[in-house]
Image 1 (tube, helix red, strand yellow):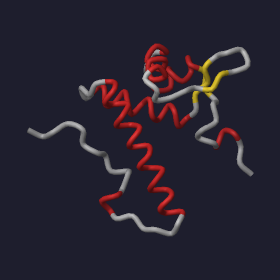
Image 2: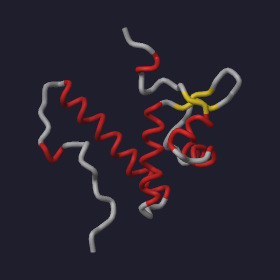
Image 3: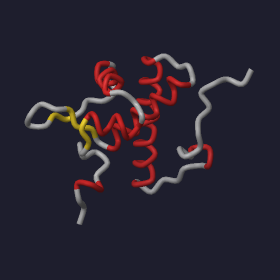
Length: 114
């Protein structure tokens, strides 16, 4: 039996709690909504509610910003990484095999080594 708390897409966290969990401000989370990266659910009272998956995306954007990547580029990178992860899961579901180079757990360098 699956519960809502096991579901990474369940909007379990208020804006304040979500921001605290990943060490950002509520304004940062709103900016990701304005950029089109994440669209939080709304409670009956109209308050934003975030899922674990959305917070993982937001945290990845924060990491890229800390590396000097612009917000629009960081959002695009995170969107593409997320789509790739979905594609990899689908490949495995269909019985395919990923190579070690396809490993999503290996960090992808974002800063060129000059």
